[in-house]
Image (cartoon, rainbow, N blue to C red; front, side, top):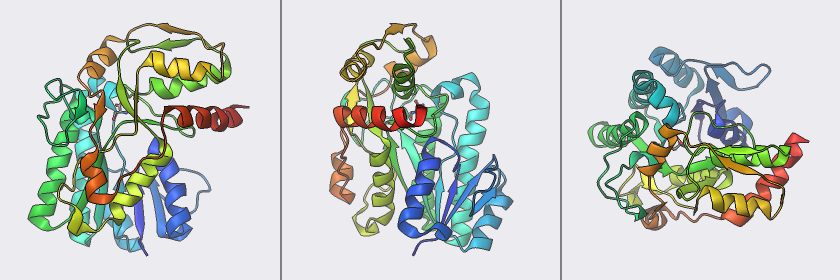
Length: 311
Ligand code: SER
């Protein structure tokens, strides 16, 4: 049985990953950590991911063997403060890898569609292709993939990662990302508010629904290491759509949805450099990636689940 530490457990992915992993590995085998305290939560430790000694202490005192490092400033927020984004995104990963080296842990870190830049093919973006991102977020993701591979080759640290599309979920909100619009549009639709879309109507991006994200993380971390040739930065694709396509899908359920465009120049520039749809055949071949949620199923479930939460 794994003993898991989730760093950044209060975020969009962390909050649902904590519940999911506890349902698989048991409540007391999953320690949640975040910089913000969660009053009353069991098996929780408050720590700053940039404090290496605090991360080491949590691992040592709890017999941790697997670390999920989910700490990151997202793409748009990163452009507002690139120095901070580098310090947080790389600092948290470096600490996780170093502690993993010392205490013999596995490490999962999300990479992203943001790791690609304008010179990568947009359609069916290959697993191995030029990676020259133009955001500090993307620079951190490429550096993070390389650093994770380095820690594996040099020190034998079992570090693994996937390049996540924009994550759509009904619990915690994302914050500061370019793909956030695809979550926010559901809140507006369900609240009967006009949605102001910050990216162009025909801008395609990869997206993924949270249950598939959780599945990818568990599947990759449970995968037979002998089958993992790439280890870090697996493309995982699930669906691809533009704002006008998701709006049309939501309107099948909520016909009154009103959407206007006020293009955010930062998000426009960022998303213009990202894939339309990644080729995920390597993840399928090396560890059995097999997404379950497409646009129609995700939209129906979001409206149902988020609708219940907002009532
Ligand atoms: N969702 C992230 C962002 O938009 C991409 O990985 O920044």
